[in-house]
Amino acid sequence: MARREESQTETDAGTGAAAGGAAAGVSPPTLGVGMVGYAFMGAAHSQGWRTAGRVFDLPVRPVLAAVCGRDAAAVRAAADKHGWGGAETDWRDLIARDDVQIVDICTPGDSHAEIAVAALEAGKHVLCEKPLANSVAEAEAMTAAAERARTRGQVAMVGFNYRRVPAMTYARRLVGEGRLGALRHVRVTYLQDWLVDPDFPLTWRLRREHAGSGALGDLGAHIVDLAQYLAGEPVVGVSAMTETFVRSRPLPAGATAGLSGAGGAERGTVTVDDSALFTGRLASGALASFEATRMAAGRKNALGIELNGERGSLAFDLERLNELSFHDHTEPAASSGFRRILVTEPEHPYLEAWWPPGHALGYEHTFVHQARDLLHAIATGTDPEPSFADGLQVQRVLAAVEESAGKNALYTPVLDAPGPAPGPSPIPVPVLP
Image (cartoon, rainbow, N blue to C red):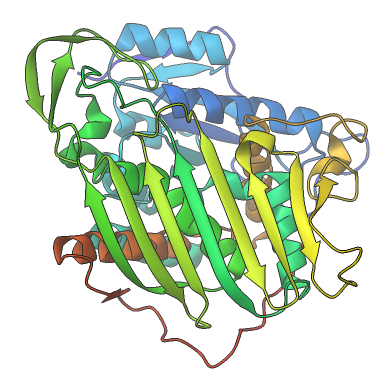
């Protein structure tokens, strides 16, 4: 029997919001958020929902109505810690609540499709963590449900939070303005080391039935999305290799948290990849390279991306996430070179609401920006980015990578992706609401 627990303070979520925000002196309408999952990503999303309305002037105000998890005591503790009004142990009960208008999915990938489709069919807006699903078929079903829901005024967005790093959004703007000219190369790496220890326990992230894939889906989804987002065009084909270096690990001994945990004496089989390495071609003909691994000793969360075009280059390092490196190749050679742009000015994306210039932001701020953007999309009736269709495109690239790796790196077209074009496609300049 599912169990519901409420705090003494009732939530005040309304049933909807009109575009344009509240009039002067009038509080904006509210939307109740219900979140499924409360661990690493749940904590990050909680921070975003809790903070967005305290930083930005929003057209609607999010109310943390309820959080859901299978362990009643643990989910109640998470609700109290992160400021959620209620706690549920069955996601179906969460979706059925009248005070929940947005369902935020922070669970392992094997449950994304079922929860998202049910929430959309129940008339809720949906935010779903990446990767969108564990398979192309699931992602297609989710996208179809989102398209049906869109006709009813609902929106569905994927949580690719690194798009919301101000330096990344600004880089997209520079590419869209043509500052790099036609793209030639995109290279992306995402390196972590939390699996180097062969005795790290066999958590859900290492089981295909729960995670879908390993470093490929966990890290590769991020860098495929970033590459396509910044370039403004899709990956249309790949040639790939994947490897599992440690093929058995201790079964977990007790609860695991985040990317840590303890193992027992009994071992189980790892059924996902540890590392993925692949090259690709974009629709314009530009070349791309991707590397995703959780076995890079000494690298904790090292995401780097560089774009080279006929007129210039851009480079970004997540460990210096307030900076962007830009080279304008049209300048005289004697004085040209990469220059550091400190992306903290109020003219930069999202920065109008934060601190004075030079005062840095961090990882958690991307989730604040994510909540902000989704709420604006709901209030104004506009399509959110990235959409479920964007998540489906990433899923198709990941599937092509696995297919290519299974065929000894044979070049594999991405399903339903457009073929290479003779030249670069025009890229719209992103405009923040």
